[in-house]
Image (cartoon, rainbow, N blue to C red):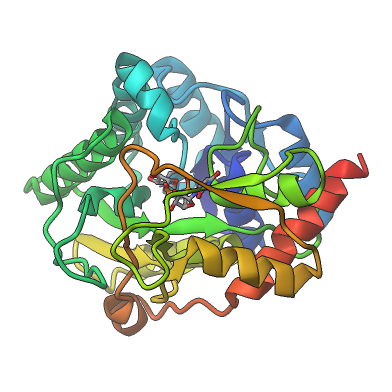
Length: 342
Ligand code: WQD
């Protein structure tokens, strides 16, 4: 039987590459678009090694409407799209707001236009728990009000959500979309052939932890321990990237089945909050590595605590994570070791 073709923008990126693997293994035919602006060719090689097949790839920019039209025309029978392609660094977005709005919002508009021209109706969009800002109550549900974003990056996610709601609500729109609000993705594929590839000094916790354990960084600095949380460090909901990838497969299937509403929003997290200190301890337990760390000042802009209420994802989407924090951290460590080995 012919596989159903799903376009995956940003398919060479951290989450995108894991989603391509899960899509293929679930029987879909992923087609990748990536311009390698923050990803590497090696991710495609890793995906193909895991799957043992070549995956159709187009090295274009999602903002290039003519190139996008050419891909839709050449591929012919695309049934849906997962739009991962975007810039994602909070700090950088404050330095380069125009680039962030142009790339993140502009690429969505271009994609939606081309999808309409080619009659492709189903879209899964990468949103973020950043839309909740500093929540008034925990855990956050999909009904928790969004707050004014504290970075252009966060603002682009909110704007894209608004655009999608409006386009899907238009009478002649035809768009059906699922907005997935990711919490903190961590870890790597069990094969250690794909994983996170941070450029330069990592800003995110887990790559900093694994690089410290590997001796690339001298020590981890924990950004503050005087928050209003049990041990004083920030609390996040760390979700294994393979679990997160699987949420996309479920979402695509739901769109194609037509069982849901025209627009649906789901949190993708574990439903558990862990502090930075708990992550450090879990890493030590999971890997047997001792981690050198120190306590530094709070990082500007950090939300003290956030984690997901996953009731809606479990009940409506039928999605649940399966990995523990230790398993996710062990996979991140295995990936770090495989990077060190070349
Ligand atoms: C996690 C925790 C830090 C590094 C960001 C974006 C979010 C997103 C994922 C985008 C925090 C602490 C970190 C370090 C530390 N989406 N930390 N020392 O900030 O929760 O989320 O990335 O792609 O939108 O805001 O993730 O991994 O940076 O930090 O103590 O060296 O680890 O303070 O509490 P964050 P993170």
